[in-house]
Amino acid sequence: MKNKNKKIETEEQKEIKKFIFVILGLVIILVGIYFFTRAFVTKDLFNTSEKTYQEGTINYDIAIVGNMLTRPNKEYYIMAFHSDNADAIYYNALIGKYMQKEKAEKVYYIDLDNALNKKYVAEKEEEKSTSFKTIKDLKLGELTLLKVKEGKVTKYITNIEEIKKELDI
Image 1 (cartoon, rainbow, N blue to C red):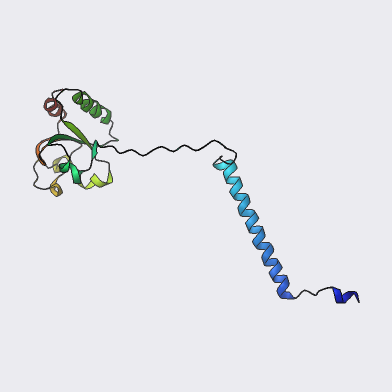
Image 2 (cartoon, helix red, strand yellow; image 1 turned 180 degrees about the vertical axis):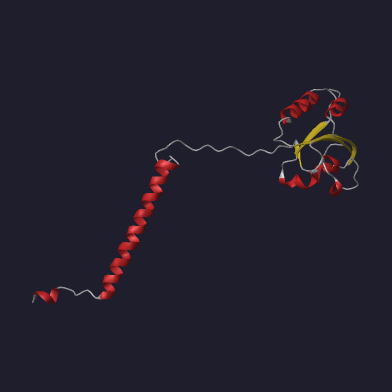
């Protein structure tokens, strides 16, 4: 009589139980990995301090070659150089000194390391284009100062001493 109350498990039921145990095991392992990562790798599991976010800002002094002739000023300078160049700090200091002058024109920066400007950078010093008809023909050297007046380049200077003379520094 005792056999009537016991249910007999079929092979399918045994396989389903095994499958459920495997799934539960995987879930437990994944949850463990998650908490392990949060506790020991990112170390933010027990960190209750609030996260701080930095607001994004737009730097209007930086330009790209494609829009350098469409700046809102009537007359301005554009200083193009590689930002990772060892002399970049010196170039920034020169522009800073120039900008302190009372009658200084606006100066925009072009970072030649920016991917959008790469196609306008001369590979060799001989490839620089001091005269060009369109932006497509422009090839900038390691350091270039352009003077723009009413949307047209009026001066193209690549020598640091001539740049200092132009800026009266």
